Length: 504
Image (cartoon, rainbow, N blue to C red):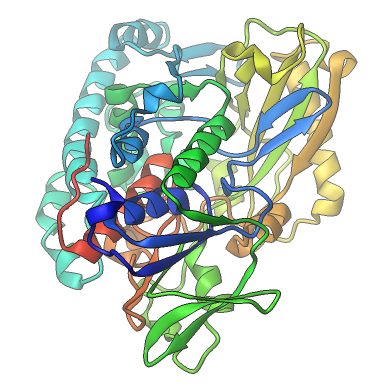
């Protein structure tokens, strides 16, 4: 498909927000023939996928795990190009290495047999349980991902006709219930329950629909883009430029303008206006409804299903380099604290910053040495924390949490860290609220509960302004790279009425 003979030829689309959802939408609408302006309030595109350079160290600021790589292949194929001519996706093994509080270690491996061998070190019976869990995850994937992820859910009927399949798949259960029904060892239960946290959910109240993530990884693998997600963003930027997509950075949108019941453009914070036939908001929908729709035709919040909303956790992200190599640390590590369910309740329910924590540790230099000077390592540590609905003074707690995390890592898996660490900095939920206009500083917009999924999530098309569309983590299908990139397919189908395949 090319932009020369497409569906929206001659019409102008303004897309607000140049994260992966906005980029994917810009490319898909350009392929349909629309003239596209992509507006980003930061100085560079990528949304959360910014790149930080400090003292010779490079850090991907946001997403680091690539699954469903075919979704990125498709964006190049829209214009008869090949991703492999521009990017190198490297498969990882292990997918993740778990470090448990009792000192034990578990590698979640790229092959099923290697994973079973690892599981048997903890529980022989859980090897069979894992195979049953994987089979159930595949059943959910075959319906949830292949048939529902890229389908619009803007009408009640869209949801009702899927209810029999969702009941048959037991998606009224939580991810934790599905995992615990198959695995018995407490540490294996923890390891295979963490996937909802990758999209902002508590496994103890996230619908089992999201168990499809497990099979998604098993089906396609876990990849790292050489050069990082920043390299992926840059090659997508070059693709957009080759297709004459107008990219504006430093363009803070203050208002979506309206007339005659339609969105007719945007007004920037500097007073400039851009006319549009179509507006797509590629950020947190709650922010759009609260801050950008100011005119007399502003849709009522009551038209948004599922109120009140429950938001995902916040994220504290710590970046640093080391003047020492740590070759025994995997590319992706999960460092588990002493508590699991109660700790998640502190974060999600009580909004309390506890003394203990669990961590995701990214070591890109395990695969790509260009992220650090020779003989050095680049690290990124992500710590789930309460969002800004909690009462945490990050001006104080930011430094204190840094010290606790570094002390915990040094005493366990990064010996001598205090002597070799340098170029330390961090982000808190306050930065997510300021930089990304994320409501309550949540890391993944609203949480992936059953009552906030599909029809009950923010809709991909506004109920009142029929030419205002939404993509990204807060709308259907949800957070995570596969989710936000797939949301562009949902908008494409809404515009054309033509079913867009999952590709998976």
